[in-house]
Length: 126
Image (cartoon, rainbow, N blue to C red; front, side, top):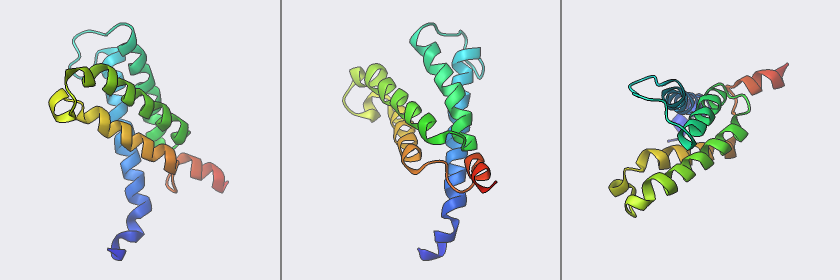
């Protein structure tokens, strides 16, 4: 599929943008009670919401994306093992698929960095 190789950088930018924005929505839900959340959770969920609300836009924009994504990946691994794994071994059983998808998507972003189409790349060009 060499014909698609020219779309690698834009596709990665869209990947980073969508995962970051969706993650920020989860943070806004936990911190501000938006998007159907009926109450603002205390403790660990509120801390997770703050991480999501800050890391999501950084990842989406590509500004400090690698460290933000690494932190977000760790949060999602923690969420999986604390919130989902006790309810069954397999993600399909314990409903942890979303946490694992975020975890590994953010691990990929942390390893790859912000990419060519990012705020970081704009600063490097100047």
